[in-house]
Image (cartoon, rainbow, N blue to C red):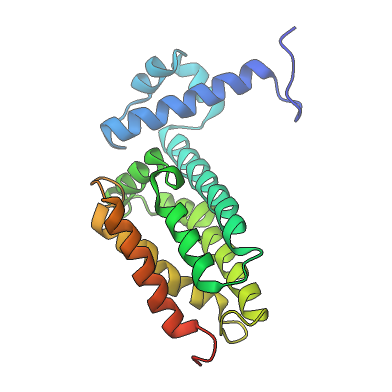
Amino acid sequence: MTGTCADGRDRRSVVKHEAITEAALRVFLREGYARASVDAIAADAGVSKRTIYNHFDDKRDLFLRIVSQSSATLAADHAVIAARHLREAEDAREALVGFGDEWLSPRGRRADHTALVRLLIGEAAHFPDAARAWSDSGSELVVQDLAAHLRALADRGLLEIEEGGEETAAGHYLALVRTQANGRSFFGALPLPEEERVAMVRSGVDAFLRIHGPGRG
């Protein structure tokens, strides 16, 4: 018996699907979207081209699925880290620094996803659907999750954020903390010394608190 997964899918089909997506990610990152071929992906996955087309419509569909899956995984990672530092926070600065430190550390960032983002930057102009998939499955969820935590901190008097302004505040945090690190490391392509990363997080959080700290409004 081949067995089935909890959702009723054939286990062998699931294993092949995962092998294809993992191989496709490797090939896309190595060759770029335009140069990557279904033949190369099939060879890397150890399956036939027909098997790939049994799971995906075409190379475009496969790439979009990979972008969505990688972005969703990153958003889930973010949610775990955010909850760990922000859910029961009693001091806003300490919590926001701790969150930023872990999120931007090597253990909090997926190297394959940051490499995929670099690829997307080059493809976005002529493949906008991929950029939308990245946003819808990942970055927008990250903003919404962070916004919810910031709203909760504001409701407890630890931040000052006007009603309905939590997504704007989340954008401020991301711009002041994450964007600096992404820019200096070119989305993970270049090493970012730990002391520099630590300093960026603290200066970014302090700037954020000058906008949204208690009594600042």
